[in-house]
Image 1 (spheres, rainbow, N blue to C red):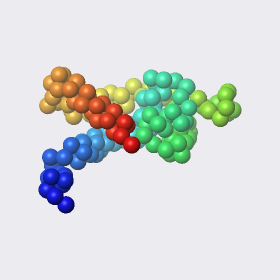
Image 2: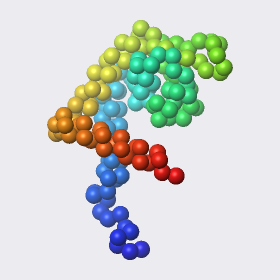
Image 3: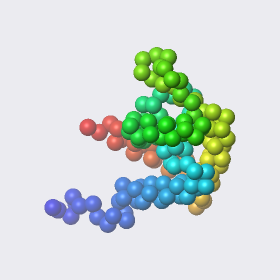
Image 4: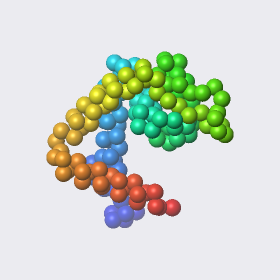
Length: 149
């Protein structure tokens, strides 16, 4: 393998540093959500339902970056805790639209505050312009990878 084909030092590889950031973010989110008895997928589910009530299991799974099977487990746990409700029978097809309960909205508010603190800490060394540039750059990366075969 020629030198030009090699990745080079991992510390200078965008993908490697991005993965480091993702792991650090996930760990910080875990710590922030632990006092609320929530996991990151549970929080993601609550946040998605807070913004888009009535999402199906499949839509929630895509939005939370988990499998449909994992989302079923997440939803059952949230339902058992009284944080979400789902109809016993599907109003259309096989979809069971999920909604937050009042207790779920209370948990979401507290969790959103905790996650906002994590985000503020993560971005503390960045100006607003740098945060916007970072967001734009990451969106461009996502688009480029989505377009690749």
